[in-house]
Structure formats: structure tokens, C-alpha cells
Length: 470
Image (cartoon, rainbow, N blue to C red; front, side):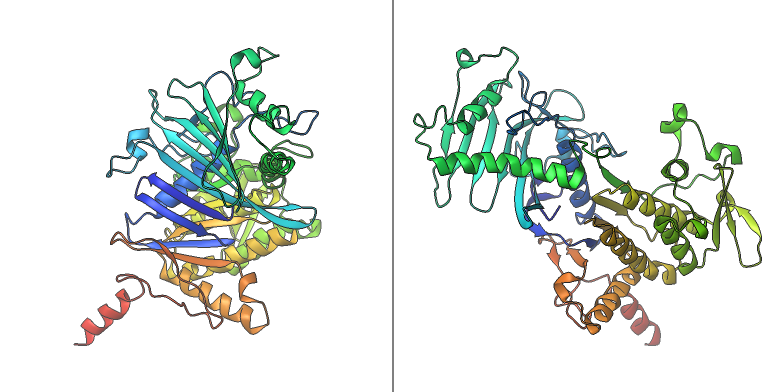
């Protein structure tokens, strides 16, 4: 995912398009919109991945279940991660009389070795059931053309529209139920097929180029789903998103509960779920096995001074210190448990090729020195994924000045050894609390920022120090 744009979503009446990096740090006061930003991205991807599509024999894309007799719904209770945004009325921006939410994301993909970008947007209205919204429009766009599906108030298919380059007037396509040859085929499918196959090109004054562009826009969406999320499952399971919340650490359980059976899996806390998933990932921490994901875990354990992680009988986790003393993991300090959970989860998501990783306040329970090293953890995770041929996006909500400062140092060191600034993965976005738009702080080659943070972040310690010596 490379861009995000929001309309009428929680904090934001309108958030203009933001270009993301590979490691995105979201900084700002409480209630400034950081969580709204992350939640919009998570819910968008979660819903996009639950579109039911299949490639048909013509490679046109048969959107068979997603577009049945009624318009599709948008789920505010995410399917793949434990995130419940509530009801439509809880989520729509309060003010201005808004009736629809618009979420729009841009994706890069490769087409014959050439990088291209496609934008997908959902226009969402209210729904009678909790945790749902009605999808009123779905649009697929390039920088120059737009193809949109629209639905009527009663939920039936309304029309498709195609907006040509340098034109302000879209071409509207409709089809009658009598046109259907297959009673199980949705009107939208019929319209798309007719357009692409040229059956109605004269009726709508479509050129051959128009038809190719419309087909290309649809296939661009399929390319993103294929390349980023392995949607069609050619080689492995569908790849989803990873969400690491600021979780409560529950250490009040017996050792044998560390690895539970899947009957009770949904009842486990995030810490124990991560241990379960790590065991199932079959990542080896034995140095002799040369498992690169296990090596990443061991390297990070050493960098953070956490000792060595030991897994016995594929069930019990221990931490071994420099004196060779073993401590059950759940008896470690909360900061150590938090860090180890994040490290294990990152190793899992890189091995499973998760394209999007959201982390909520990773500095929770951590000493300032360890907070700064979180930037190294993210950078090393990014490099491991890159060596695997992956482009993972990390979106990190943080209040840690130490994490941000360390990222500046990493940027400086990279530039000093000749790495081009545009190739360095870090971006920091500041979210003001005065109603102004979030903005990219823009790293310079010397690690400094081109823009200033608002009051109360990097200047807070300085203000306290000045008051102390007065």
C-alpha cells in the first residue's frame, strides 16, 4: 500500500492523499487522528481481502459472490484481526452533515517489470445492522482514468461509469435484467463483460482504446491482489495483514497453557496467541539450522539484552540469561514480554509474507534506551523482508521521542554510506491537534527534519529542564 486518502472517517472530514514509506511512524498528541489513520487502512485492506473473486477463462475477472443480487457490505468488525470499529454512526465524521464515508488507497504493482499504480476506493453508507455499512460505490482508478460501480438505495446494481483522461463527463453504462443470459449472473458482471467484449461499444461510443483501458483497470486490481496478497492462492495461502496492538499482558496462567489447542484459540490473549503462531510457523532458533527468521529473533534478543529464547518440547518458552539461568517467559518482566512478543510476531509475518504490519505503541513498558532500539528492530525487519523480495509496509503509532530520534540517526548513517534518501524506508508523519492536516516531517540527508513538530513532543523535556534551573 503506497497511499491513503480519507473522507468523513472518524477524526477526518477530509485527509488528502498521503504517500507512505515502508516504515511509517505516526506521531502526535492523544486524539489527534493516529488511530483513525491506522484503523481506516486496516479496515480497508480487511474488506478488500474479503471480496470473493475468481479469474475466469477470459481472464476478465468474475466478481461472482461479491456482486450478487444486492450491493456488498463493508464490515467494521474486521475479519482477520481483532479490531472492532463499532457502528457506522460511531465512525462517520461528526459535522458537515456527512452521509457517506470514502476510503481510498493506492497500490504499486509490477506489470512486465514496469511499476504501475492503481487506486481503489469504497464509498460507504449506513446499514441497518451493527458493524456494517453499505458499499454504495467502488472505484478503480489510474492517474488518468476511472472506472466506477454504483448501487441504488434499494441495494440493486445502479450503473458503471467510465471517466476518460482530460474529461469531466463520465460515460454511464447500464444494462437491463432482460439482457441476462445466465440467471445467476449479476447485472454488474453482464455490463462489465459487454463493455470489455465490445458488445455495446457503439451504444456508448466507446473506442477500442477505451475498452482496453477499462479491461486494464480491472486487471490492475487483480494484479495488486495477486502480487501483494496472493489472493488467488496460486502457490500458498492468501497473505493478510498483521496487527500488533498495545495489548494487556496476562501472566497469570500455568506453563502448560502456553500452547493450547485451537478449540480455545480465540480465548487466548495476544501474548499466548503469538507463542502458538510462532510454534506453528516452525521457525527454528537453533543456530545450526541456519533459519534466517530464527536468526533474526536471536539477533534482536541479543541487541535488546534479553538473553536467549529457548523453546522446549514445542510447548514451553524460557529465557536464558548470561549465567545460563532459565526463567519461564511468562515470569519475565512486562517490558521483556512486550518486546519478545513483537520480535516473534515480526519474524512470523515476514516468513508468511504479510504485506502490511500495524503496530500500536510498541514502546509500552520499555525503558527509553530500548525505545530507541525499536527503530533498529523495524529497520532490520524491513531489510530481512527486502532480502526475501518482499515490500512490507509498517505503520507504527508511537509517542516515543526516542524511537523517532533513533530513526533520524539511521537515516543519517545510511546517507553517509551512499544510500539515496529516497531508498531509505523511514517516514514520520506528525498529527497536529489544532485541526490542521497531518504532514510528512521529511527527513534530510543529515537526519534532521525539514519541518517542525508541534508543541509538547520534542520540546517538552527542554521546557522542563529550563524551568528546573530557573
